[in-house]
Amino acid sequence: MSQPAASARPRLHYAWIAAGVTFVTLLAAAGARATPGVILLPLGNEFQWSRATVSSIISINIFLYGLIGPFAAALYQRFGLRRTMTVAMLLLGAGYGLSTVATQYWQFVVLWGFVVGAGSGMAATVLGAAVANKWFTERRGLVMGVLTASTATGQLIFLPSLASAVTSQGWRAAPWIVAGATVAVAPFIWWLMRDDPRDVGQRPYGESGGAGSPGRPEFQADSSLQTQAASEKRPYPAGNPAKRALDVLFEAVRVRDFWLLAGSFFVCGASTNGLIGTHLIPAAFDCGIPEVRAAGLLAMMGLFDLVGTTASGWLSDRYNCRYLLFGYYGLRGLSLIFLPQALLGPAAGLGVFAVFYGLDWIATVPPTVRLTGEVFGREKASIVFGWVVASHQVGAAFAAYAAGAVRTGFGSYAWAFIGAGALCLIAAVGVLPIARRKSPAVAPAAA
Image (cartoon, rainbow, N blue to C red; front, side, top):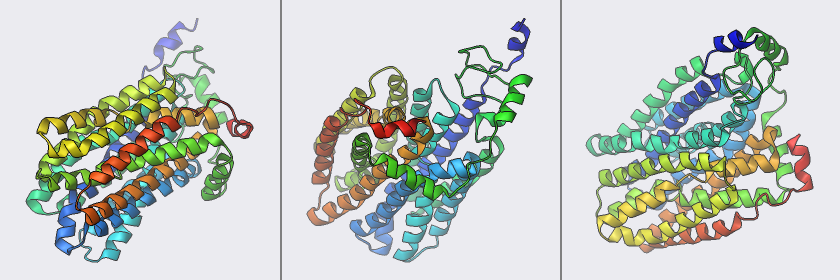
């Protein structure tokens, strides 16, 4: 009887450990991405730079963060998750640590724009998608929601302390905090992270076969499965990862749904970390709200985002992802159009904004990942989603610079917020046709 063998198996599937390590990695990277919004004002004051000038540095950072995404997905396949994640943390630590001694504009462009931007891109949403796709067959949407919510958790942990440190010790305190956190995470990744379920003698969580009982998602690591997994193990795919990323892009651009996914994510980036993540604290300061209180507002939004994004992952496993995205973008658009009034009105208005905007800040990610997998197949979904994230970050870079330019030119952020809200309402309608019909170009990608 197989009963004793089944009972001897450990209950914890290693997929949950891989997801936990990824969550911590993304959390540290989220702290790194939250830093520019906290130090935008004091940095500009010290060097006498305009909002547009400082925003241009952050814009380069966001652009590189997005551009690296699809190539990072290919790097995960070529060199493995563990090595790539470790290098990402070391890049973030080096970029922020060295920036504390920078004094020239070009130095910040190199360190924040290129070094930190590259590190952020290697530890971004596309990493969560790669881990969820590789390690999970069941609960993939929920896991993607939790991993995406690490950004919100990072805000909760980092933003209040970063704002307090900047207020009491100057802007250089924030980069040092982030540098220490990211470098500390690197050995944790190297110790616990694994590249593939077969590295620990398992199949993806929820996948039946081998020695396990069909349909059972428990830890399947008895000797027969270990032997089978070892025989199935294959080396990392050879070839240039950059070429692979570009080859997948050339296939994807022939599919209509890719443009709908990328276009909606462009708007997503423009309305989240490009606009709110970068400019909400300066906009609040313009309206007489202290920086620490504004950072607390962002942290509060992070709390609701933690709930909203996790719930979005759960919902994306059960309901039509197109309709979920329609609701998310529509709600976000209305929230942004309301924001200028909330900043000028009573504190309760900002609380209402924080709740509604926070609930779907990045709730768009799990359904977008799922739709990308449905259209392009499991094997190429991570790289295609990397290109979709690149579009997200192009939108974020555009909004980060454009909002600074609007503030410099008009003395107010109001038109930037209203314009982003209008784009969200357009995106809400644009997502409805995604994955309604299969394109012939999709079939090879799913193989």
